[in-house]
Length: 276
Ligand code: NDP
View 1: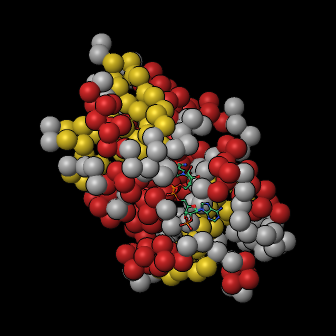
View 2 (view 1 turned 30 degrees about the vertical axis):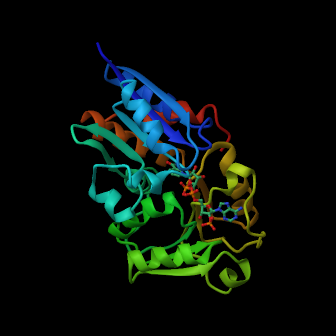
């Protein structure tokens, strides 16, 4: 039986659970997989992908901060990648790398199917305007949310996303004074990467999030700062992105192999080792 060679490229990437997830998917289908986490600095993804293909690599995931860089390296793009202008999935075809984006479908599946949110008519705030934010916005809009507020440290990046994604979106600064003037949303998504450095950049406003589901796209240690902040703000519920990670991985497996893994058992196995 031939070995399926996949990898996830990013920086940092050592924390990635993707190798474990894909090993569990492979076991479900009786396949052999060699899935590695490969650290790549911004600007070096093209060379890394070439070397990977030469070693037999046929598919890859791309994580922070390389999702926008990956777009320019693809010979073709799926619709989700075109809309997001961000790629988190690569598949080697006859013409070269085909890029797509499974982050949005992964998040929406986790919110709907695991956390029971309908999203239809929801008001959503999204912290962050990087690759993950770009990836999830089209799927949130498709899910029927009523309004999306994009909140980012670098205001032009948030405004560029508003310009890209249209009428239901607005931008606000990453500033508690400006945010606390408004009623908080039903769903607050954190797509900042600052948790990897052990910090969350807003001060605590006790009781402010009492009617809000606060959801960090990060998981494990990187989610701790946001989880602690959201709890201190009295959030109605706090969740992390482990379920999203497993769902986006399942969609990646589908796009590589046309097989649908069972995700619940994989998520349960991962949850045993994590406190967030
Ligand atoms: P990017 O590097 O593309 O974007 C980082 C974002 O974080 C930007 O909005 C940036 O703001 C902001 N940021 C970083 N540091 C700070 C800080 N100190 N203060 C304020 N803002 C800060 O990363 P990604 O979008 O790819 O990833 C974001 C997070 O989502 C990561 O933690 C990643 O692990 C997680 N993720 C989880 C997935 C899952 O399946 N569960 C899938 C995808 C991502 P600015 O624009 O001002 O620089």
